Image (cartoon, rainbow, N blue to C red; front, side):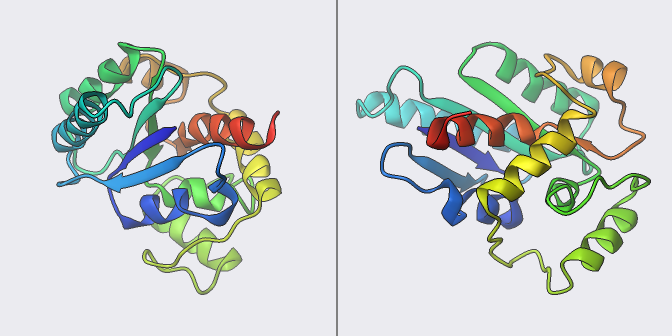
Length: 191
């Protein structure tokens, strides 16, 4: 099972796509009670505690927090990276400047996109009907293409915000959401 706590509706809708649905692997996405990192972590911890209490948490289940840089402080973002680094069954899907960069990678390499405006303008060129509340309908191949494009910047999980800044930097659009998508795809369809 993949438990995914998201910052907003866009992210939740993405992980509820048809290509992530199968009886053998459960993918559940839930919006945090508030979009700031401390609230997302509380949502994740509460969800995990409830599943554990009810006996519904099994070895191999994974918990992820998916968020953007937004107005979070470095300390708040670092707390999410630390939470994920505590256990191998946790992860962080972090996007700069926003989750829509990950969506854009399903269509193109997104070179030159660095600001929210750049990302949204490019995304609208490829997906003119895009709106934050639209349910995406990407195929497994689309997701695999986005994973390959994202891996050009981030190849492996980063344990801290400092690692992210040193290896990638927040001056350019980037994401670690592909690390989660890759695990889901591998669980559902194999490598």
